[in-house]
Image 1 (cartoon, rainbow, N blue to C red):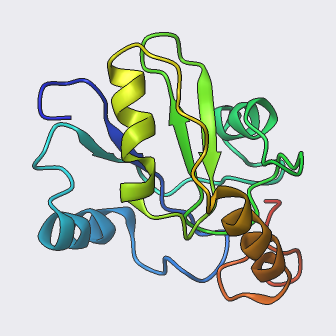
Image 2: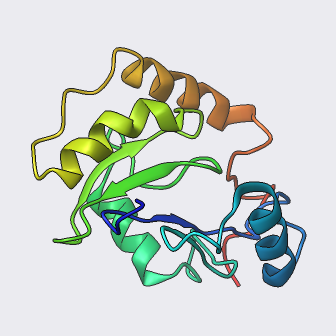
Length: 151
C-alpha cells in the first residue's frame, strides 16, 4: 500500500516455459510495464522454484498452510495468489490465477483495518472450479513431464 500497509510480492519461476528471461531482465520489464521496484509496496524476487524437492521452504509452507477450497495444497498454475497477514505471517486466503485483483480489494482492506475477511465473492468457487479444469490442459499449468520439478 501507499503507506506500508501491505506489499505485493511476485515470484517468477522457471518451472514451466513462462519465464525464459533472467531475473534481471524480468525486473527491468516489470518495472517498465507495471512499476514494480519503483514502488516500495511491490517486491519482485529472483526466479524461484515453487514445486518439488528444490522448492523454497516458504512455498512448501504456504502450499500446506493455505489450501484451495477443494483441499489442494500444490500450486496448480502460474499466477495463483495468496493473501498473507503481514503482522502475523499467517496466510489468510488463496485465489485462483484468473481471480482479478479488484476482486481481492475488499479482503485487503479488511486485513489492513484489522477486521475479519468478508465472505468470498460470488465468483470465488466458480473461479476455482474453472482453475481446476484448466489445470488439466492449460498452458499455465504445472505438470510433470511438461515442466520440471526436481533438480
